Each structure stands twice: as structure tokens, then as C-alpha cells.
Image 1 (tube, rainbow, N blue to C red):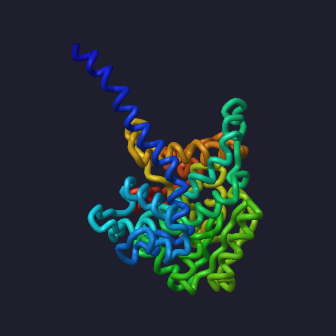
Image 2 (image 1 turned 180 degrees about the vertical axis):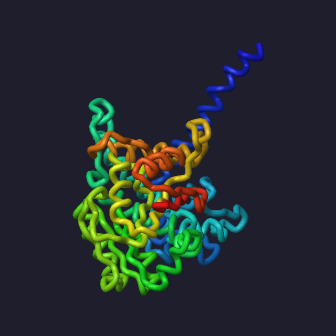
Image 3 (image 1 turned 60 degrees about the horizontal axis):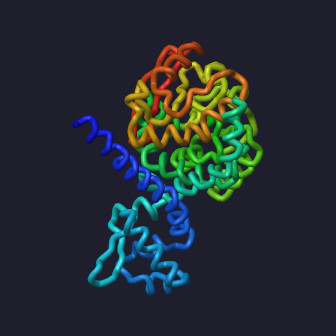
Length: 355
């Protein structure tokens, strides 16, 4: 009897979860709209009714009213049934309006929407085993990922991660040579360059459009005199010896990470450091059966594994590879020192040195 009751309860529980997931999936576009139309930023200034929010943002009241109701149902904004006003808590405003918060939620949802353009291509890849390169995704994906990176790295890169590396911060202040490989839009390079004006930076990516976007970003930031962006595959970058080489959420989605590690070893100064930033992951699948693990497995299915399979090398670690595979590949490249130096809710940082 007890077993039968359990079986009867399971569909209801799973149905509830599916309903929640479906609501989140369908609401993703509403979050992006709220960002693009300035609805979150306006509402973050104080409580207001739908009509006032519509007036402030130059939008249609009926649409705004429905948008607000959905945001309240999601817990993204607050609602007072007596006054009819909506407002945002400091936490909600931080997540939904700050580009340098713990996670830029609108950018993350935009990334999720953008990747769905590859749905048909991914279905074909399932049948053929072929890869899908990062550069083959819609440009919306790359632009949104740059915004997400800003929120992931800005709070900790300069203040916590770099100081935790042995002797690196002092080198950067004196003037060091730094490389970022598989840089995308060179977001992390920009953060470092602004903080350490005496150092010189070179960012590398194999995708011409990403290189162009990174160069434009560098120019707008006024960093062109200290930052170069070059077109190169990660396993072939040049210009060393470098005092610091960096990879940001990139090593796990390369087809030949060992080959890249060997190239880093060749280009790194004898006393240099390789800083590897990777997604947080447990050592086993069981340890990754969490909300964060679910997010990363989904991202890995669309981005990381397909990108690795699109390259030569035969590897496809995926976003939830964990620490031990990273340790093994840097050891295989001849490095003698490997340690974890920092972690956040979404990232883990490793220090790699020759000795």
C-alpha cells in the first residue's frame, strides 16, 4: 500500500517541477524585455503602479501590467495587493539591474534564449556526433556571454583571485606580461588591464568576429596602448615568455586541453603562473546533481561538449569535469605545481606553475 502511494505521488511531484521549469523557460524572454526596456532599472527606484512604470519607460501600460504580474509570480519583484504597487528589494535590484552583481540575470537569460537558435543543429549533432563551435552560435550568445563574464569575474578577479596567486600581484603592479587565451571578448583582460596600468596584456582568440569585438571593447575602454588582441588558436598562441597566462571558463571546452597546457608551458616564464578559472564542479556525477550542476550540464550540452567535438584532439571534458581531470592534464604537460586558490558559488580558480 505504501509503495502504491509513493508511485501515485511521484507524477504530481514531477508535474509540479515541470510546471515550474516551463514557467521559467517561457518567462526568460520577459526578463530580457525587462532589461532592454529599462523596466527593472525604473522599478528599482521605488514602488509604483503599472501605469506609472509605463509612463517612466515609454511603454504600453497593459503590457507592463501583465509583465509585472508575471515578475511578481516569479519572485523577481514584490507586490502590495492593498496599494497595487510593485517594487524591488535590494537583492532583486542587484541581480536584475547591476551588470557587476553576483550574476547578471538578464544577460544569463539572453544567453539561454540565444543558444536555442542552435536547437536544430544540436539535434543533428546528436545523430552524427559532429561538433558545433562557439563561433557557430548566434552572435547574441557571444554578446550575452561577455556580459555574464563581467558579473562573474568583476567582484573577485582583482580583489581576491590575483592576490591569492604566489607573487603575481606584485609583478602586475611593477609591470608584467600577461596573456589570456580563448579570450572571447577579452572581458577578463580588460578588468586586469584597468587595475594594473604598468602591465601589458595580449588576448588571443581564434574567432575573427570575437577578436574584432574584443578590439572594439579595448578601444572604448581606452586600453589600446596596453592591450593587444590577436587571432590565434589556444594551442598556438605566441609572444612569450609571459609572467601570467590565464584561461577563463575555457579550458574544459577545448578539444586538446593537454596540447594547450603544453603550449602554456612553452610560453610561460620560468617563474611564471598559469591561472585557470573553471566552473565549480564536484568529483562525481552524484555530487553535481544540484541546481548549479543542472545549469552547467545544460550549458555544457549546448556549448562546451559540442565546441570540443568541433576541434581536433579527442577530448570533451564538459563544464562539470571537476578538479582531478584538470590536475591530470596540467601534470601531463609537465607542470609540477597545482593548487586550488579560490572558489565562488559558480567558479573555482587554480594556480599552476612549473615548480
